[in-house]
Length: 212
Length: 212
DNA sequence: TTGCATCCTGACCGTATGGTCAGCTTTCAG
DNA sequence: CTGAAAGCTGACCATACGGTCAGGATGCAA
Image 1 (cartoon, rainbow over the protein chains, first blue to last red):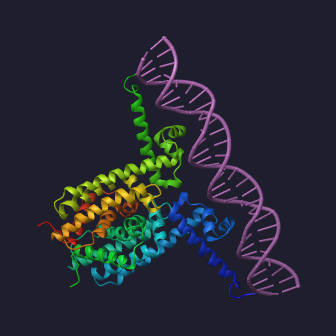
Image 2 (tube, rainbow over the protein chains, first blue to last red):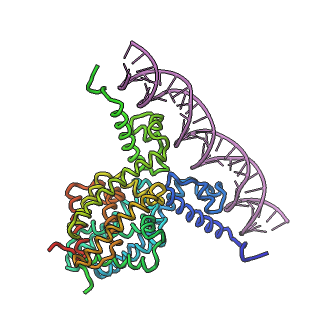
Image 3 (cartoon, rainbow over the protein chains, first blue to last red):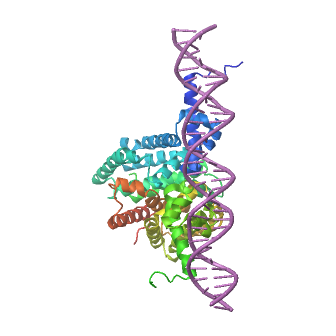
């Protein structure tokens, strides 16, 4: 009848179903937490029978793990902005932009990540002790060098990083609160831009790294 | 046999049991989320039989509601620092101190609060639309006045508030991450002090409100 | 066309959980 | 001292959930 809807090669089927499941799972885990999420809800949202979920992901834990690892990948990618930069203004500006973009485009993933960490990182502990720690140590070293070169004030690099994570992540994790205080409406393009500009201005000024 | 352990008036019993249950519940809700928490776990931690929990709190939802309202009270109290202040240096400094103290002393409560907001504030929506909104509007007005009086740079008051909430709350909600990056050890007194000082310095400098 | 691997799913199962209740013990006002 | 109210709890129940499985449908290589 139609090639437009039904060609579906094996590979495509698998890829598309996994994608649909992961997307639905991300949303449900974000909204209900791991304990509150049910395979049935995820299945319904993905438009598949529950048993089909277990065909692709053996257990709820495995599905959850996949979701968490996905967002962790995205999170780490944003980190690269830091390396290319010549100084704190470049580096921190682009990092804030990248993290704010994540908060805006992947609020559910951000919430799952936050939830995972809040509950003691049962799944990601290994990553935190290896990948995340290495990444952090590297960035601390970069910031330290910027300070030595007089490109910014002597601020504790770790607390500065926490501040960057906190402020940017906040717009995803506490998005509901922000929306409520915004009259029940989600932030407009303009408001997102203002948010980014404000954060950048306060932090860059705060560490004495204003553009020359 | 002993008066030392058994006088226990009715009133005392009720007060102490409710307190023990609320404390246990706060911890379990923080660690497992609402969905992952079980009445049995809370009962065990409180050292009471499960049925006794239902004597004091009819349902899991009711118990959860009490926990959330408790932390919301504490949260609002910290807000008063703002009013007494004569300028941004005073006001924001003491607010950061107060919120950091909450993050340190009530990390479980902070996590429950964060979780509640992340999941769309099913319990606290009303409070957020009334109490929280009024409080926020009031503080926005104060900040605006400070700007008019030239006591700080013209920063968007709302985004400044979000920044304060985010940075301070982060030390509770993401405490596990911070500990992991701190070599698996919780922050020392000195490190907490440094955290506070860093946040204050960066933000106050960032908004152009350094002490004269 | 055939055979096989992949994909799919309704029906089912064991368990854990929130909640109930009948009946016990303890406190305390009168 | 007494009776009633408050406090307590082991045993129980209905439900919902994660997970299983036998067997059917579908794509595809040969």
